[in-house]
Picture 1: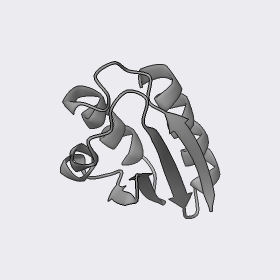
Picture 2: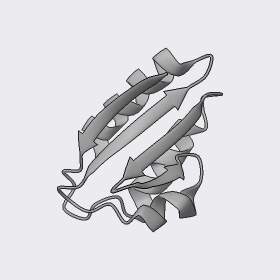
Picture 3: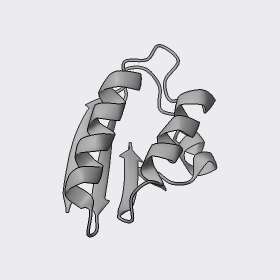
Picture 4: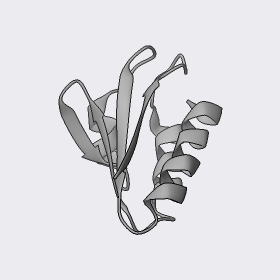
Length: 85
């Protein structure tokens, strides 16, 4: 299992456009990918689940990746967060 934490920098938080891009990125991998915020968790491959987390600027999220391609998936997703959120 791999995981990383990230503080949202985007002033609009995780809104529809980057959430859609995030789902598209997550679906490239076979691993189970979970995003958590304030005790709530969501499947990173499901757009509406991510939107329900309502992550805002300054919120800290944790992403947990578990599966056969977890190494590459976690590294790729962490880069995605840094570049887009």
